[in-house]
Image 1 (tube, chains in turn yellow, green):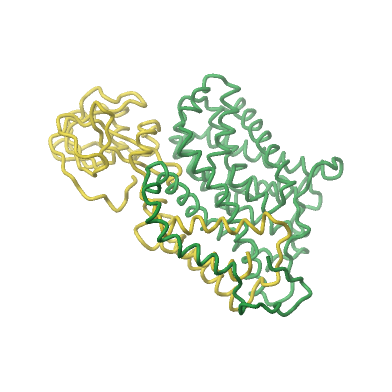
Image 2 (image 1 turned 45 degrees about the vertical axis):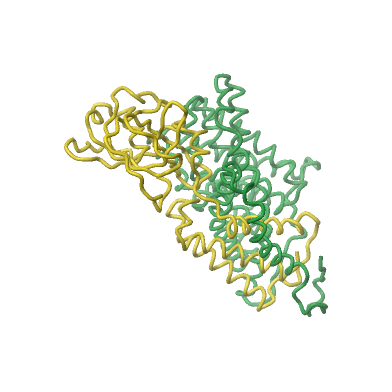
Length: 226
Length: 336
């Protein structure tokens, strides 16, 4: 790849990085602490491309073998995927394969804050799954509010949410079975209010259940992962 | 491919006014992608492909800032660090310098993508290759950010954090010593290939900095993409359950998690969460996963082949896998 083509690729890659960081799209791929590093590195890459063209930096370099001449072409792939395809947040496809495989306690808030026994407790799906296994007394007879998307396994349906610690590659899926309510269409985002069905999901890998009192369809949240 | 030698000071005349067909090809590819996307839309909308694309882009996007950081550091090294200074700071005997470089890895809180260009620029500055390799293996595994995330993922288990620190440091130092010892004695062992590498000492500091960054970033990012293509595919199509099938057999479990850590290529700051969820495996097998991953994975192997030469990588990659898995088993057996 020649000097100008490299500069074009570099600035386009910087553009993808910058856009992912500067818009809400970052939430589909990485955790929110990555946001400003993305913006900064996008700006730096675009700047480097301009410096290389204007100041003719690195113009006289030559490739020493065929492989390293071809490798920069690979960068066209993330650029096309980032600009043109813009893949959505991970959803049901991953959730069906990984549901409740990970230990929810490592994703949920480790501190056991006593739950409010009179009002609604809004919590992440992973926290609910975690509490069903280690905070059974605290969870009994408490009203909870969970938000996630709808998946099903033929028998019933689940409210499902993915959690990431660094980027989408390490995503883990958590789901809660919903009883006593009609299943909304698959992959639709919903908020479910209800109480824990005691004794469900107490072992790692099991799926806890909620007796729902209210199911509302909502818009996909800006942060698709927990 | 245009080839201009170092002796030529002015750019060779170009027919098309200095842009070249390759730049137009890149622009053309990007422009053609939009109409093409409409044409092959149904294929691209399949959940399996979309999941791959999301994970692929996530790996690339997650790595770019760390790669930029690594390239910036490597630029700073090429500008500020002279070969004399390297010689003064680093112990003269490489066998002693290796453990020093291993411990120094604590000071670079970045995951593995950042450290490959840094190691490369250190060797360019006259650091013995064995010492730079030790630093490269140690830094992404034993820095504070990684140790803290390990503690969080394993609900504060200090023994796991200590075991990870010890086994990763051991791996890095043993590899360094192997290269120190073998450099003179085993001709078949290839050292990192830095002879053809870029070396510029003329020009102002800024232009040297920009030239180093320009030289480092694109090849490293290209190889990173190569690794991310495979890692994302493995992530989507090889479920954890396949790996868990062998969890009961101690030997197979170690082999399986070594290979899994290699192909799945997780960031060292996130791998502890995945390791913690491998509940079917023994603690030692989980430790193997945590020690192998930051030292060697498919995207690192691709990047190292690009930076240090393919001949070197063909020996280095299996050697690191073997040493890392053995070190983790040993430390796991003693500590856990």
